[in-house]
Image (cartoon, rainbow, N blue to C red; front, top):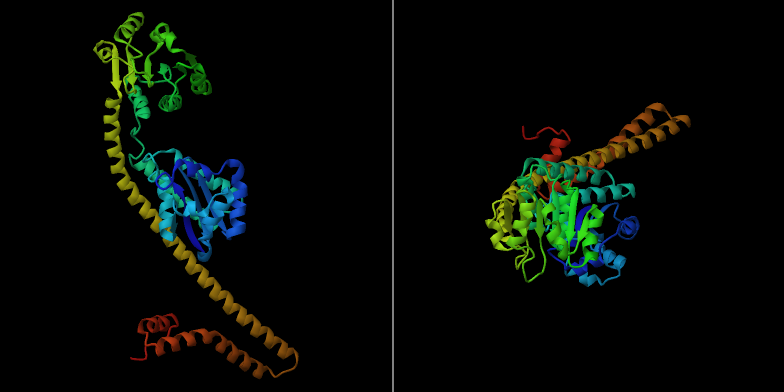
Length: 420
């Protein structure tokens, strides 16, 4: 059986194709059963996220190519569409790929932490479906072990590498705790949605989203227990905000210096942290001149992101070394397991030959054949049976003048060196 890692990701396929072959939780159990039935994969895991769909399987070498056709058929698309946008790794390269994925080293955002949980869930789903054996149990133990080491021993996930996350991390440096901070988000696009998610993860309890259309603001705020405002309501509510993060498509500033100055006066000059993620800017540059206003623009955050990304790339070098070490440990385990299997097969075969000849001898004795003749026949047949395969191997090595194989066979069979 061959270990393979087959799939598509953000590097090889468009979002349209990734959407077509994504697996939902409802289809995963059927997919695992279908994969085993059609391709003969005796162990498998399917990882499906917004950025990748990958199939990890133990499968006969000649069946590996069938994975592409199976995936295409399962989702009702042309196999050629997959072939032109997919990749397949085998054996050691497959194990390395799986570990790199779990460590966030193959992610769109280097070092992103969510992928490890997604791989763990995929493994659990496969285990519950009965398609995990000893090889995958050990492979994923190694995978989770190295992912844990990478998280704890490197800085791969320590620094913000998106402006949304950087803005939240910057707020944490200014406010000792975000749990008691009151946050106003202006806009309701993807960036603000991501900011809201990060704020929620940091324990923010008071969250308000202001937008031109309340429906979009509600879609972001309500799942997080937040409130909504129209843009026209901002002047009367700005005084309540400790943190303001804005990202709209407005061509004119949403917050002017005078509006912020009035809000600060009502706050009795309690500091206000403002992050302007918009281009063109949502907050007038002159706001930075106010003593109690701390204004950061998207350019300020981009510098932080670039510095942090460089730091993550340095950490990735160390992480890759850890992955390589773990891959080698898994390969050594596989080789040891293979040796044990060979020894077991040799012993089982030898014992089967012995038992067959012993039973024959017992039957001969029961039929009244002389005991000495039975013993001599048993000894001869057992000897011939046990030396048959080694004799063939020795003759083959001698005829081919394969001195290396001959030396190994002589050593394995405990033969004396005839040259001495």
